Image 1: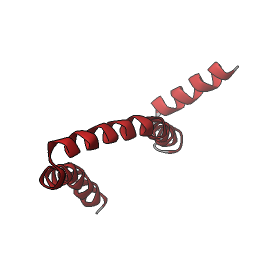
Image 2: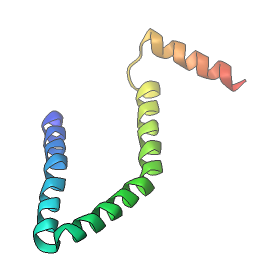
Image 3: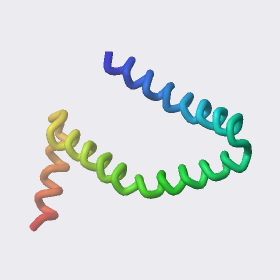
Image 4: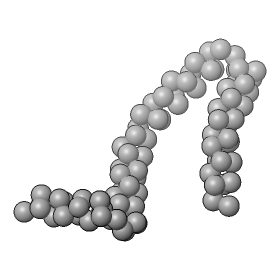
Length: 84
């Protein structure tokens, strides 16, 4: 079930910009498309720190509280030894 939700989200993430770009070009023309592109690029740039921090937190949570393997224990030991 979870994979279906992720797959649907990914397909929508591909189709959404195509639909938005098509509507902008139809309604506002090339100049409106250029303005939207600049606005979208600025928004993506400002969104970067939050996205990166969230991805790192999710990754570390998966490492430390997820699967218990020998490699995980080795990583925990190395992190503890680096804190000293």
